[in-house]
Length: 300
Image (cartoon, rainbow, N blue to C red; front, side, top):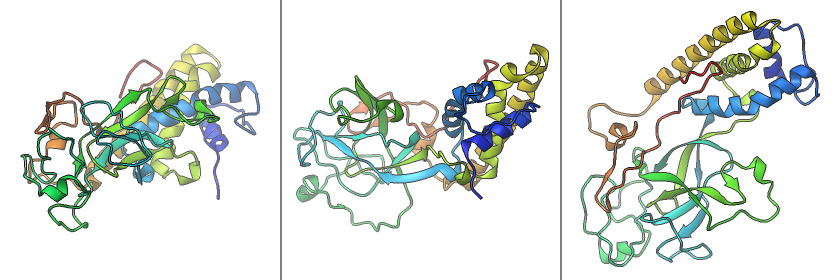
């Protein structure tokens, strides 16, 4: 059985006690116009509000630039002090982390030796490893995923291809684009996918999305302000409860271990990286979920 955004909208109408059922989210009726104004924003915010398992995706990134000049058919202008610049995936709602892949970065002349991707100090790489993409320590590719340092930024050097519908592509505009900066060659990204098809949602996300959407439209669709305020409070409480469950489930199902000190866990809420390559950078490691803004002005 397939589900559509219209089904989600009708569930939101049910949640606020409406006797109206819409036939299509784009039909143009009063209720449909209210719902479509909020639907896509609600979807993206709810996806960013927890690390939903059903939206977890790992995919190769498209390289835009290599500061070392060792990659053909890409630029060389990279936001300093990073080595590689990649395009943000067009279906990315939230970047979670860039996995280390065992490939040595191509070093720029004059830089220090590459920091060990398995520890915290500097290591002396063999001369050949500093100019190739081989794994210098020969570790098996079945190791546990270890996040690498990265940051999202804006860059005007690599505009989108002509003819693209920019309004439909996250992070892309006429004056620049959102990019991923990292020192990992041939990088992948673990991220939260923009899952447009409701049939791919799990039950928990669906319930949270319905309540969140209902809370945003309750005042407009209720018969009076007092009723609308009460309905909004009720649906906000339901959405927050679903977010709590999802966030706890993510912690229980994660592969993090508490018996070792892991630097990216200690920095997930905004502390600085002490980078052995370039010193303190001050950026946040974007592994945590976002707070979700609610129509009553609160953030959860």
